[in-house]
Length: 91
Image (cartoon, rainbow, N blue to C red; front, top):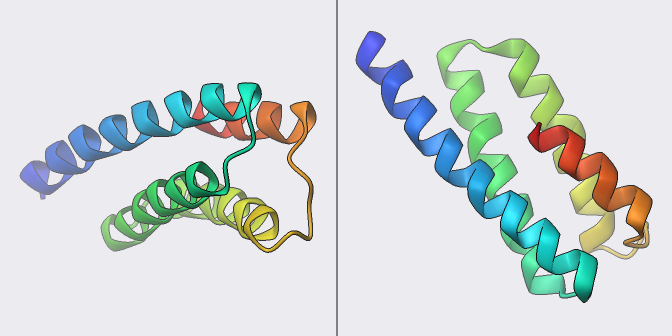
């Protein structure tokens, strides 16, 4: 199990770096493909968290995933506030 957690942490940090960079870009210009990329990264972290039994992290990612899904489907507009919430998710 220790090796699985080590791999999870390495992959999670890589995904979080990608998410953070994408969110910085989204602050400059709305790009739906970046929103999709962020969704996929958060979805990956959520799935891996669930697999390892990290339920609190899994639930946190699920909330972020829901917000990102609403952004992807146009139910929520990307604003400075939504980017701030997503950056807080990364933190």
